[in-house]
Length: 460
Ligand code: FAD
Image (cartoon, rainbow, N blue to C red; front, side):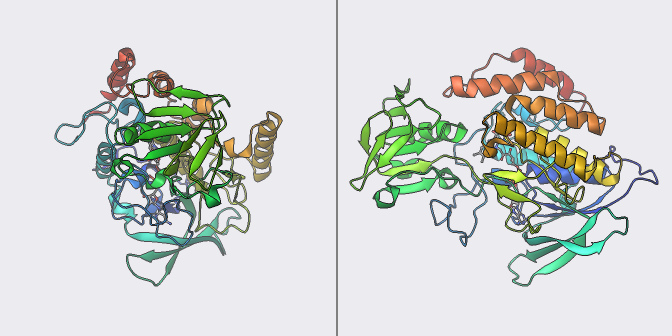
């Protein structure tokens, strides 16, 4: 199809040759926005289809904790029963709503399964002819600044080294800019547990969880308090003997039996584990457990990126990055989509991508490198003064809407719709308050109808 939003390039607007790494939701919308702006785009994707982390697979990594750096990577982190934790209306891209598509949707539910999200992303790729920009089964091995520059004193060229399919030989190409969209749910973060080296049970990370059956009749301890721990604990409770959820965010005396379950308890954090298989919680309770599953999130990881120390990951803060996107040292030729968390992911990707595309073409101007650094340092200092650890630098939560509106005004597009903001906030609260029912019962019918009024603008 012809994308009618493609900008007619004024002579002063620059067309760049841009490499996008990854064809998950972020890479797909980045590619669309870059092409709309007039850039030429190549998307490198190591899998054989679009969808990224949403592509379910039975396969898990051989190392259940995923700590071996030489392990073959299984990209997906979704489990078999996974349904979205956001309603489809607020999850989708602005001008390609995540609605039920006659003849296309496999799961019409408001909080659908992972397969429906993949189908939506495939539809998006087809609608905007994104696939023609993608090189599948092509892994980016190394990204480094090339010595050549474009002669304008601005953008450094980037050398992309990659391998195709089973080939062992690396090839390389030069690009004016790189947009990193490699996803952040494959490199597990683990909890420190005193005594763990001599504990005899099985340890694993939720990255390698797929189905509950292997936990039949077992006593399982999950560590974590976010969506994965909430979902997986309930999935496993259907077959396990006992399920215990431990979390740092719970008060030290926490010990709660979960309503609606006979075998599911929430505790404070694990204090220590012992050689006899016991697990002691800070609340003083002790159990004998077979499995400890870390539902403790992930670390940013850019194994291919070589910037000579200009971009580093320090206590899970990627930096320095201006507005969580541009590396001042290389701006605007190196950018990242999707670094922030506790956000509406697809909406974030779309707005960040529009901004990157406009900055690369010169339609939108960035502050000087010095001014970007001043802003970043001020932001770091503010977090430090508030006692917020570095690893929360990219956590937006409620401030995401101000961030989105800032991006939208830079791009000259309308900001986040009022209904989307309200729906998102309502959903975040309901996940924690009604973990058993929030996907099938809701009260925000007025927001749903406002959303569908807007969607009628985009229906073909
Ligand atoms: P990914 O989807 O991970 O895509 C990255 C792509 O980059 C992959 O296809 C990968 O193969 C490719 N890649 C990586 N490295 C290379 C390389 N070196 N060379 C070539 N290709 C490479 N979001 C929601 O909006 N709603 C939800 O309900 C929701 N639930 C979630 C549940 C779980 C368990 C998880 C893990 C995440 C959930 N998310 C949810 C967040 C989700 O991650 C984002 O919605 C989004 O799909 C992430 O997209 P991405 O493109 O950033 O990353």
